[in-house]
Length: 318
Ligand code: AKB
Image 1 (spheres, rainbow, N blue to C red):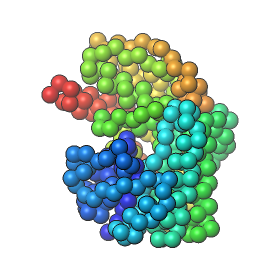
Image 2 (tube, protein in one colour):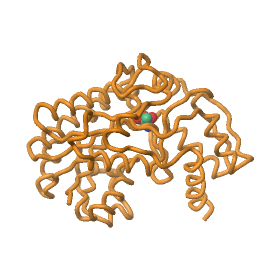
Image 3 (spheres, rainbow, N blue to C red):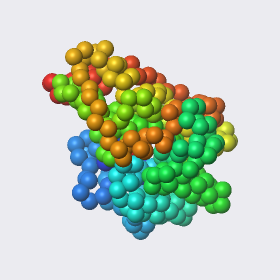
Image 4 (cartoon, rainbow, N blue to C red):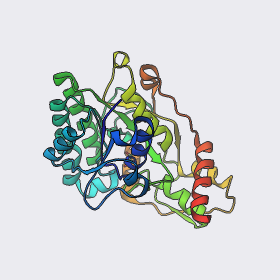
């Protein structure tokens, strides 16, 4: 049985991952770490312990790890790509100084650590289609810089100190539960909200811009399966390419139109997000994850669209 701390438990991934981990390992064995102002609510608040854990405060992390005998830390604290471009110092402080705090506490207390990386860790010099597991990583965004540095730092702690660090490179994550904030791939979530509410969608990303995307249930499973994987089979650690679908705005629009035929979309391109998207891969090659720990996505675009529309319709139309 694991004792888990989630840092950033009330964010887009954390809020769903916490509930999933609690359903597997038991409510009392998963501590929801949060920062003041982002307190857990509802089911998340009621189903297990919660503690203030600011990733930039090493002592706070250490105190909670000791109090709950934590052996596994999910580090989900980060600024997403577009926000990080506007607040680069803060993005570095949370993404790298925060990670260093987490890794040091993990080293001292023998914890395993999961820290997600991203498709944003690649840059314009990496092959765009079928981006390999091991290739050039020269991102031109602060988000990407923190993600590559985080991968290297996590590998360093594994090699030098034996800390069990593992990670996946998440694509854009799509969910009907907690909306994302400040990502380049957020349009692929917002489009479903507009469609279900009967609103015209104003797309900030140009037609023809392909990016990897994934439905949240697959992403949660990836985060759990990599931490459960047999370490003797892992040739990589930080971080594995994972993939399930790649599309551009026209393709997701058509997928929604199959279920909501009068749905309309227009384009008003956001220069910051478009620039970031243009520097990212179109589609990652996830062969290593499939071979080393059996990664396999369950959702494709159509099954995701059906589920998103059904769940959001229930919420908005009652
Ligand atoms: C973002 O768009 O910033 C994130 C990501 C792909 O890492 N969703």
